[in-house]
Image 1 (cartoon, rainbow, N blue to C red):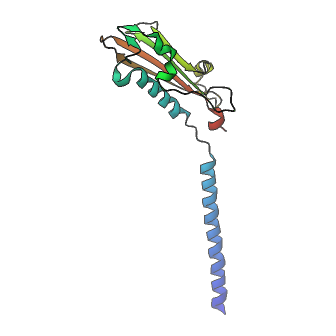
Image 2: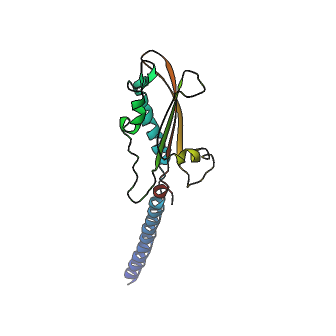
Image 3: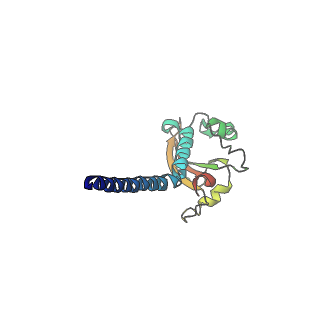
Length: 171
């Protein structure tokens, strides 16, 4: 009789411990997967690198951007098409979630020789306030690249890319 009572007590204890373990695993899994992922930093950097590679593939200026040391305006007119950018947002939203701005300087000049931009221009102003941690502002990526054209002229490319996507990333 004593062994049956001991076995039932051990079984009850075993189910209690098993319940604690399962409950702990469920709570930890829920806490881990319920946190929102904010990948806007990586997305802004990827967008910036993609545009930089479009303007200056393999470290040389795009052959349709600078021809004979002069800028070719057709590249600016079809900037999104030439760089294979599609900034169309979701169908329910009226705003574009991306912005890219490129300034191209000849050598060490202070005034840009050429500007390219695409997307929602409102995000450029918000990038200036990026030092402040607001979840409702876009995430911005700034980078400076250097490139050469076919005539060995040095060009400085300053690039700004911004990704808003606040509804998807910040809860």
